[in-house]
Amino acid sequence: MNVPVVSVVAKSGTGKTTLLIKLIAGLKARGYRVGALKHDAHRFEMDHEGKDSWRMTQAGAATTVITSPAKIAMIKMNRDEEEPPLEETIQKLFADVDIVLTEGFKKSAMPKIEVHRTSRSERLLCRGEEPDPTLIAVASDAGLQLDVPVFHLDDAGAICDFIEERFLR
Image (tube, rainbow, N blue to C red; front, side, top):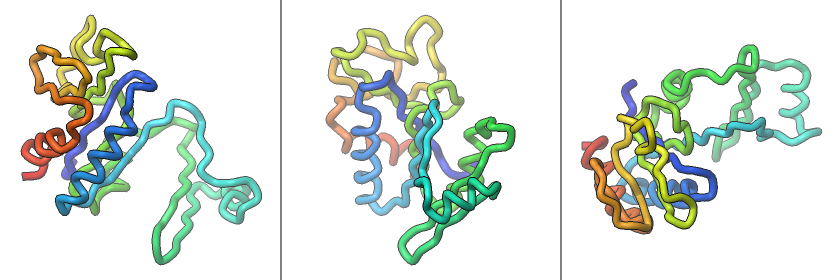
């Protein structure tokens, strides 16, 4: 893959989205074009019943695109209701960005930053019984001693510095 990808992972309710939003804003402020990709383990609906695009998809369109001067949205039905590989999705949809930040995808082979909040869990996902070799950093509210850099959960600037140095220079 040409575009670098960093996955933000954590247990539910830990603050992945909050950190991700800060990282997107921080990297954008530095002049980077950032793509965001969220994993949803459940079925989600982006389109609304009764809208023209919803009706087109319901009629059987494999891909429905909505376009305007401000943005483009696409609803693409997966073959056999199987989620395509993460790498394939990124290659197809993110060619025009400098970096892709994902939320979730804990089992992917992408570099990961784990969000850790002690009130949510004492144990890290990526440093449990089977350490994940793709873990590159941890954002935590506790001072942890690990084999990867540990940043304070609220220090998005330092995490942006780390991402910029490692993936964008």
